[in-house]
Image 1 (spheres, rainbow, N blue to C red):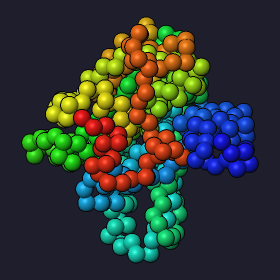
Image 2: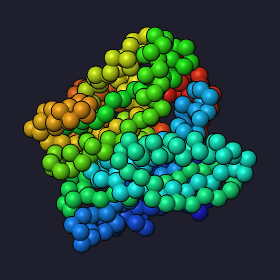
Image 3: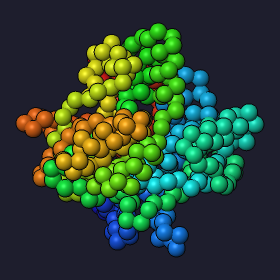
Image 4: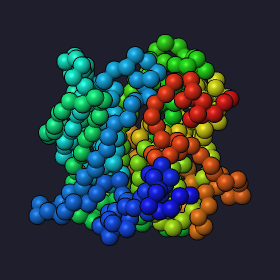
Length: 350
């Protein structure tokens, strides 16, 4: 390794950047490292939180004819999902678009349609923003939300013995990729539904608010970089390890694609791109939390237990869990690519 003054961001990777560069500067700030940043407690009896994220090239725009609607939807989703992990109610998005001058008006309107449609789906809106010209497209948004004082969910707060729950329906994006690349096939109506779900992932805002309001979660994080990266980060934030069950209940359509592709449900569920939540809850509350969320139409299932040691394992006496992670400033950072190669990289050769 080169000297400290010669280190690059690629040498450190995303996790190293946070620990070596950002934590020494900002670690004393309340909420440092959480999905959403704490802004202030205001006189109206709420806490304001904010998050900002840029939109990568959507996988679905590599699998089929590119459509900026999908980029717009994803831009809104990735920001609203961070608010969900805080248990916040969204107040609005502020957007920033850098677009080439060759972008057509029709393409720009498709981008706006995607952002607006996702905002409507989650009962929020675009509150303002900025647009400028540039050589390449860059899409960024900042989402503002509010929490009831004392209820805000954070990545820290979990304890040994807490149960880990996955909130949401995993596997749709990469199941669609398997169908698009010919590794599985479905009747047209089912294939269309799978594709629709892959193109329009849901931020779990409803679940986040339910968990926060009921005091049902000790810690939470959205699944933006894959289940492995999410659980690993939650464990690091709490000085704990985790034992995963390695078992998942997939929706029927996703389970059928996994079966045809020779994949165990866990292999498909641990991928990224479906924007669920991982929640740590007291062992005695786990059943109630699952039942409560399902009662509100939100899928949830228990996937593991927080343990004293730092290890991540599959089963109590099982092997180390070395899962798929999408980590920026590393070899696994998402930059797009050729569809079949991406599927092989994320899901392996089966």
